[in-house]
Length: 195
Image (tube, rainbow, N blue to C red; front, side):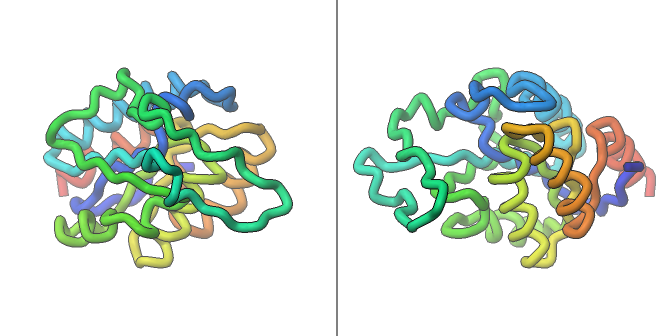
């Protein structure tokens, strides 16, 4: 990993940093650590007038928009408690931040994320969140397919197993974009300001 190449048209996109997901046991970083790194990056993006986008999974009280497909490893039923889908308070979501609500793993399908990005002229998205190989990876794949440059922040993503984390960071994300530590993303933001 090294300092990623970022355009001046970048946005931070944080995936599923909500109460019900941040509380899950994840590795190699706790939910609180992922939130802390995201808060640090959000401040750097805001200081440069770049968008900060928080994406969360939420369902209507009847659960009607939850996926109902046949799988070999069925997911848990959707949690309909509004507190489960509320953003972790430590994020300090600002009124100037963009909030996107999704109903499946990826943040693009069935949401206005693409419109929010394109109308602001965004070409690069920097991803943080939980889980690395589920919501973050699905969003990275969709971003790649929609011609966005993708940077995944290696120390601001976490998931349920070390194997899944390593596989996503070493085998999947390098094919979809760049992988970098938060400090290197901040350095890249500095470089874009000086160009």
